[in-house]
Length: 264
Image (cartoon, rainbow, N blue to C red; front, side, top):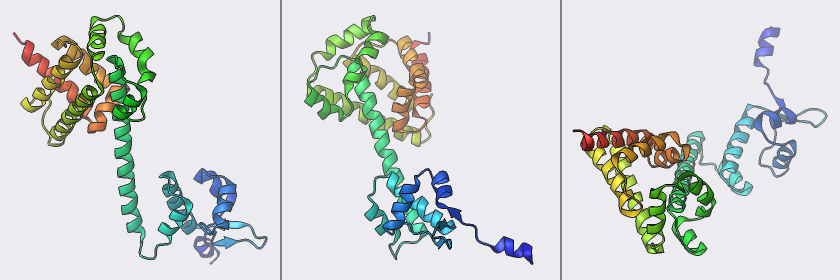
């Protein structure tokens, strides 16, 4: 009989224990209690808070919405919605996470555009840089770009060309990159092989884009770029933000395209 009682006895946790494994402060839990957001289901005879499994589930929901920037009053309204069941919360969380992922992918792409633009010697005013590239300041990459490519003819040529570009030129260049990225992402999503005609044609378009706006890219150089797009985490993040796995796919497509154009 004693064993059955032990099994059926509900487990509860102190405020310190909950703070420890939830990664919040005791003061935060006290505050949530005071405003009615998370009221512990039990208290000891001495008045100490004790949290059960239901309380922990609610805390997990609270922390999720807080991580996404929801103010406490909105969190309370969401959790106390009488028409919302656990599945509703899961669907809402999935949508919110998807939106957050998309935003982060766009931020990663913006950083990569900024790196590319600064590498190529962009000469825009601060206002124009923010208009074209958002809040990711291209200036931060200037020193690294010069250290990495400063002694090459390609770098010098790209700076000569870029010095003539206007804000509208940069917008057009970025729009072309975005359009190419959308088409390549669709190709990957459709399961096209890297060595297929469609993928190789987009790899060739990629090579010609660089040649049109920055510097000529022989196929051997394009092969080197292909390896860099996978080995350099920033380039990999940029292409994978278009579609997971795109960087590796593009690498293989560039190599296959170079092979078909240089085969004797």
